Length: 617
Image (tube, rainbow, N blue to C red; front, side):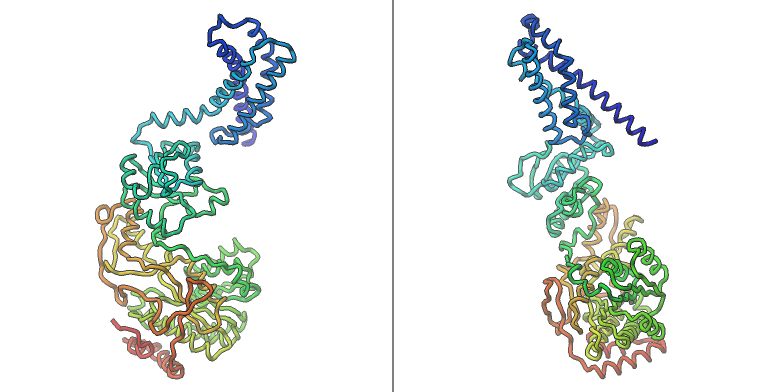
């Protein structure tokens, strides 16, 4: 039914267009002759009028056939471009030539210059007929209430800007919107036009130009530039009161998907000023194919992304282990939908249980283990230090022992920059986990490694979701200290590093990501407020709450004595293992296990004996 309705509408539109073209052909024939005699009808020889009149039916039929053949009745003219212009030109030239031939064969007298005048007028009227809708829409915008029109500035004078301008002008779904100007740093583009929109300056002129043109919204259409360039431009745009949109990536241009619908709000990730880490996972993930892979904590932020990327590389079997059934269920359903042929096993278990772990390892014999299960929330662990030791230290130890006992090939521990010179029990517990991994690597055929990185944007417990929630509630946005800084990375980057560590692993390494410059949390909060359309400390207040227990102003990625070694990826480094008395460490580990199970009031001193760099606050 719907197809019939659409077909009827199209047929009616074509019929109307044919009628208009018939009128255009008649008008072009008459006007061409009048123009030849300077629009003085008395000077026109009636023989010429009779020639045109007698040939007119043939001219109309031939011209309509030409128009149809060149698809002038098939194009959507509100999206018309250079191709449609070429077709109209060719159609009018062919109509003139055929008319010239027909009049000559029939020996109808006509001035020779008439044919050129007829063709030119036919071209003008045909184009006017087809572009009338766009012209009326443009005029309607111009005469509309200027206060209601959204005025847009586009940053970037390339192909993406060209496509976006065209869609804004032609889309039926975008009203009361006009592109006023373009900004581009290329000196050769200054003063030039893209579809009638002028390139008015460089990034240095953004603030002044937004005031000059009363800009409401800025679109950053630079999909191929580095992230640090985007960061710099966004920082400039923040000085204006305009809302910001951005075209995500260059692949939209390559795939032809550039459109207004691809625009998104500028996110905090755009302000980090670091290009995303690109790893050719296909070339390094051969070791996963046809292997049994176990991910502990597989329902968490990092664990679930690990499962997604692993599933895409066709492991023999993927085992997800998690203590929280809701998270495990969510990732299970997602993977079943996207990878229906995946051999997927989802198990509810605690890494604290040796019996359960040994059963799982004995039953499924995982060849690769990614150990992401851990308590990570610093303030909560400060209030429950025994739980941090039980889950992080003992859980890792028991998982490592099971991997060793049942012949796992590779074991990758997910660690944190908080393990370096820790000032909280969570960081100290993860440092002990690294020591366990390095110790067992020397005593086992399993290759044990650790991967250390900073804060993950968008993960559970990340500061960004907290800030967004506080902004939605009208503030205040709470920051612990004006000078606190952190390293940040995205979840896909973190997971890519973990996967590459598994490929590079020879045993005993601590892999460290070059995460660029650290970010001040206060700047992060203020930027997020601005990107949400508010002014910091005017619309949304920022309050300082003081450092939380165990929190320090900055995080380190390496202890001084670890040093750095390069890998094939210049953004990934290896920390040299620290020499330690392994027998003493294992004895202390046994003592720590016995002590924490007794639920002591204070366990930090014992942890301090094992991790000398741990500073108890």
